[in-house]
Amino acid sequence: MKKMLSMIALSLITVISAIAQDKIPITSADYGNNGIEMADVMRDNGKIYVVVAVIIALWAGMTVYLFMVDKKVSKLEKMIEEQ
Image (cartoon, rainbow, N blue to C red; front, side):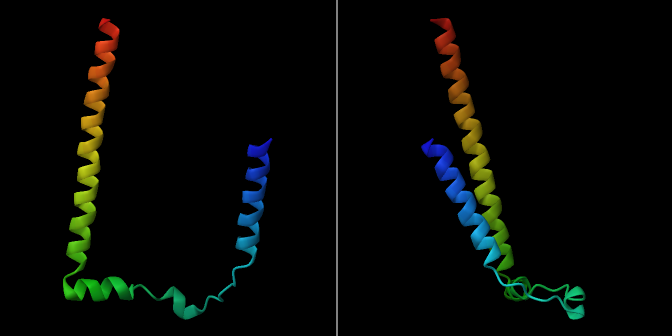
């Protein structure tokens, strides 16, 4: 019962916050805007490559960690089956 009430309360809060947001009118100039200013500035300064390298390093680290954990879990499962 508590779980259901908390889900309802959370849903109501989400709906109220979605309604409370202001709508920004879209102009015809918005359709022609292909540049992202932040990305352009970072690319000009050479920092975008640092961001990409950090993201790749994080993904690689998480992937290696998941494979290591999977190996350990498989090893433990085999040990349990042998007993």
